[in-house]
Each structure stands twice: as C-alpha cells, then as structure tokens.
Length: 270
Ligand SMILES: [Fe+2]
Image 1 (tube, helix red, strand yellow):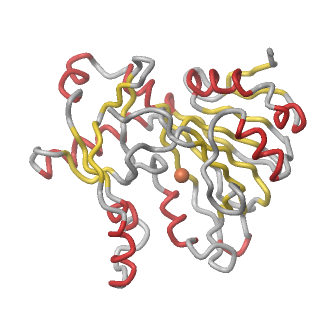
Image 2: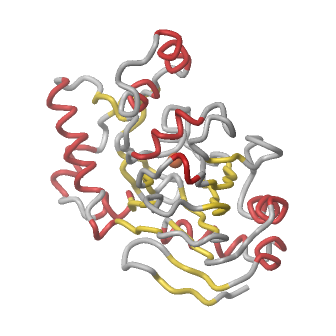
Image 3: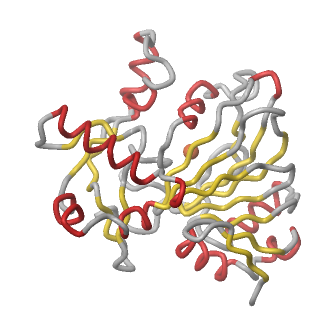
C-alpha cells in the first residue's frame, strides 16, 4: 500500500498522511517499517488514536512489549500517575531506550495525549547518518571499540546525590557492554551512544570519556537531527536502533502525558 509522504529534513524524519482507522488496520505496517529503517522517525499529525488503535497499529510493525496497561505505558513526570516518574527525567538527555538491556528495543510509538505550554519538544538524531559521514580513518579507529552502558550513570544526570535505597535500585540493572558501532543485519552501521555510555572498555578513562563526548557532539549536529514540536493527537514512531532521542524539559504542573508502546528487539547488538 502506498501513502503520501513528506520528508521533514534531508537525513531524518518523514511525515505520512493517513488516519487512525487505516493505521489500526495494519495495512501500512510494512511501509512504515521500511520508512523507519530509511528515515529513523515517522510522524502522523493529529492521528488521535485510542489505546486500542495504538496497540493494533503497533502490532503491525512488531511484537509489543507487555509494559504499562495492556502494552500502553504512560510517560509522565507526575509521581501520582507513574511511581517511576523520577526515572523518566533521564529522557531530558540524549539516549537510546533500553541501552542497558542486552539489546535495545526495536522501535516505539508515542501518542500525544496532553501537552505542556512550554518545553516538551522531542529531538531525534540519526546514528546511521552520523556513522556514514564520519571520516574513514575515524570509522576504522572506532569499529571494534566496546562501551560500558550503565543505568546508574544515566540517572546521575538527573539526581547526582541519590539516597542509598535509590542507588541500590539503579544498580539492580547491571551495566552492559556494547560495541560502539552496531553492525545491523542489513549490513548498515550505526553509533551506539547516549547518556548510559559510561566508559570505553580498555581505554584510558579520560580519553574514552572524551571520545564518547566528541561523538555525541558529532551525532547531534543539526543536520542529523529532527525536532518534533507536538500537537495533541500526533503519533510518532521511531527506530530505536538507528537513532538517539531526548525531550526538552517541561514543567510538572502542566501534566504533559504521552502514551507509549514499545516494539521488542529483533536482532543482536553486534
Ligand atoms: Fe526514551
């Protein structure tokens, strides 16, 4: 099935024109999977999907993780709505979801329920493009390096002085070592970076931290980035294996709320 598409920047982000019923029917699943791999982010403006429609659509692009209420997880920084709200503030910094898991999830969908008047724009960086455009000598130097990703390290951005009970909770998610350069099943390569990236294995600590910092700066240059300014009802889908993302901070009292579904990992991180 074909669909009207508008590329939002040269290297990342495509908007498609469709509606909730078509998305929920699953007829665009294959088209959107292809677009995700090519463009990192797919946007449907004002789609206003119900939870059931969001789930039905999500099943057309992959296997939905059993998170939240029947697969729909509420993204809010209000602890009265979500007891894990504090950890969600980690999203204010560039990251890949699930980077301290064995393999980060394949993709995710966000359905804008309630927005804040200020802040709350979401930014995505194309880590395939960032790899492709590195000079060849740098590509050769980095391919083969391994990076330790730590949930604790990423949470310290948000809360530098945790209580011991909290630190204990962070440390229950043990650090994972991933290649800096992900060679996908397709043969394409992407950079694996973000706020969980703690240090480079076997490299002088300061030198490794500097490398990770320089690569984050490289990968988040404006030409690799799409910024989404939300309107209520927008549906946004991203390929979590070939992008990083972050959200601009927003005030708690405005009760911004997103409904997210998460598509399970489908390939090894090698
Ligand atoms: Fe995230």
